[in-house]
Image: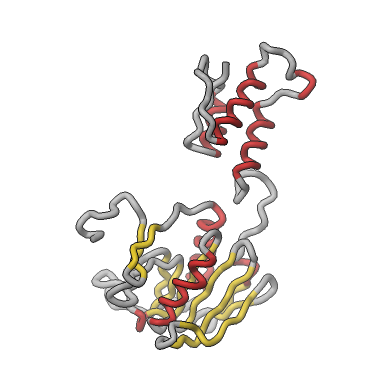
Length: 248
């Protein structure tokens, strides 16, 4: 269906006969995938192939795109066909909002195909679950261990990775994995004057801050009268591309 042009504007994967839409990545997810990919490239044998978010054919009904996969060498670098379970040494999924899905449906599909090792990187819980010894008939892994900060993981080929290097640092300021409510507060702080100056009806920053908050909550904005300064527009677009801000 992908070759026929279906889902051309969406990122999807096939899992157990179900087409699953892959949600857009937030910063913690994308950053962790990138870091894990770079660490594995540096750690494993040069002959192995470390693939990031590329297809793997588990069977006729499943073609997932795991966040990171370590595969055996291929003379054509998998340009003729995607890797199959016999080629896969390790699959990693980075979970921010998809933890339940990665632990259930994804783990079941990978175990059923005999994937020898599966890592679930729980970003918020700051733990990496290592599943090994698959039982295809039962669609499960017999062994599970957990690695946290201070622990090391053994990559295919004998190299090691520190868990603290894989997991992202805790965000301490708006802009990195911060809830939308914090974004609103940060932007209002930027736009609002000091409390002692907010009674001046001529101060458009106060009214702009109020309207910005309403718009980010989904409330319809009042009729625009003039645009905000270019610097403030750039900041709003950086945090929420859908926001349209105007002040009276």
